[in-house]
Image (cartoon, rainbow, N blue to C red; front, side):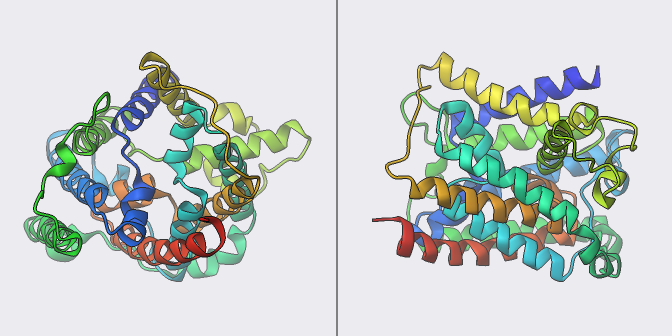
Length: 347
C-alpha cells in the first residue's frame, strides 16, 4: 500500500511540475542570466504556503510532528559545500534533480546525461560519506521553534519571505508583481504550480509521515543498479542507514518508486497535452555539461542531506536552519554556474 501511495504522489508531482513549468533551477539561474524573478517569486510563495501547511499539520495531525517527520538536519561546512556544488551543477546541467526527472518524461535526451551524473554523483557522495562524518556528526542541528518559540519562528520566517519577495521585485524592476500567476497558453502558471506543490507536500507529510524529497530515491536506485553488476553497497554507511543489508536496495527503498513515478507523471502530462517529443541537444558538449552538472548535484545532495526539494523546500518549511544555509550556498553556486555557462556553453 505504501508503494501505491508513493506512486500516486510521484505521478501527481511530475504532472504538476510539467504542466506549470515550475523549475527550481530557473528560480535561481534566471536571477543572474535574465534578471527575471518570476520563478523566484513563485518559489518564495511555495515556501510560504508550505511553511503554513507544515505548521498546521504539526499542530493538528498526529502523524506530522516536524521534529520527528520533518527535514531537520545538521548544518555546517558540508552544507555549504553541498549546496554550492548543487547550485553550480543545476545551472550548467540545465535542470535540478526534479527538473531532470520532468525533462526526461518530456523527451529531452540531454537530461539522460544529467540523470547519469546524478546517479554516479550520489553514489560517490554515499561512498565518500565516511570522510565527511566527523564534520557532520559535530555540526549543530537547529530547529527554529526550539530557539525562538513557535509564534516568533513562524512570524520571522514569513517576514523573511516577504523581504525576499520585495527585493526580488525591486531587483527585476517589474510592476507586475503577481505576473507569475498569469497562465501562458496551454500551461498552468508558475504560481498555480507553486501552491499546488506546497499543498501536496503538506498532504504528503500527513499521509506518508515524511516530507517530499527525491535524492534518497536516486541514490538507492544507483545502489541497486550497482547491485545488478555484482557490486554490493549494503555495507556502505549511507545504505546501512537506509536499509538492512539483507534487502535489495533497488526494490526495497520506497523513494525509488517516487522517482520513477515522477518521470511517468511528466510523461503522461506531456503526452496528454501533445507536448512530448524526442529533443536532442545541438552539440555533444551539452551532454558533457549535463553529466558534469548531474555529478556535482548528486555529490552535493549527499553532503547536504537533500536537493532542491528535500533540503530547500521541505527543509526550510520544516523550520530547519540547514535549509536556509543550503539555499544561500545554492544561490552562490548558481551565480558561479551561470558564469561557467556563459563562458563555455552558450554560444
